[in-house]
Amino acid sequence: MQEQVLSQNANEGKKPIEDDNEYLQKIKENSEKAEYLFGEYLNKIEIPFFRVDQKINSKCDVFFKKDIKRPDYIIQTKNDYFYIDVKQRSTTKYDKSNEKRFTLDRKNILGLFYFQEEFHQKVWLAYIDDLEKTNFYFVSISKVYEYYNNIINTIVGDNYFDRFTEIYDDFFSKGTENSLLIYIPERLFYNQLSFDKGFYKDSDKDFYKDEVEYHKSIWEKDITKMIDNIYWELQKYYKN
Image (tube, rainbow, N blue to C red; front, top):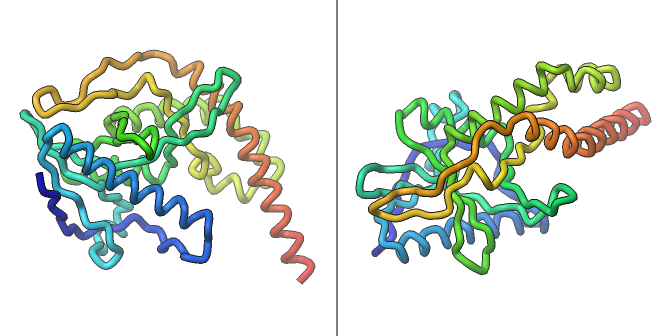
């Protein structure tokens, strides 16, 4: 099946990655490879699709204004269409159990959720587990948004961030939690996709209490790094 590229006006609100930044360039290359491999995967399982043009000059002001992120693919199954955004799963193991998680930041979560709400279309994420293979995991943006809200609302509600505001009040008043990654567990994901069935594999539920503690343990290090970076920038400013 031949790939079709659908040009669509949109914006993701990020500057192009600089070629001289080796680390970011590698991320860009891996992201592009993941998207390409997803097309191969769809062809293999014989699912029709369009690939959305992601070039910066194909994006319109409406997406800028509403902070909407466009997905990478539109696929068709027997019963419905889905909009798919492709991601690469992190290889980092975040806790003592050596569990790998699927990471996504607030901007991506909300941008894709806003797309779904604005156009009344079903948006899903497809994470590739290994760039040398074509094994994908799938989750709806609705499920990720629900997970995100449960984590953030519980953490904000128990005043977790209060002790950090004492260190640098202005910085944290802007919403530090918005800059932190959400670590999504595998149990929320489906691992199969077919034209006849769509996405399939049941997910577990009712585990947010443990998930909140998990995020706190990870964020301790991230917040400390943020604070260190702020102090370093302030010192440079006052020296000048």
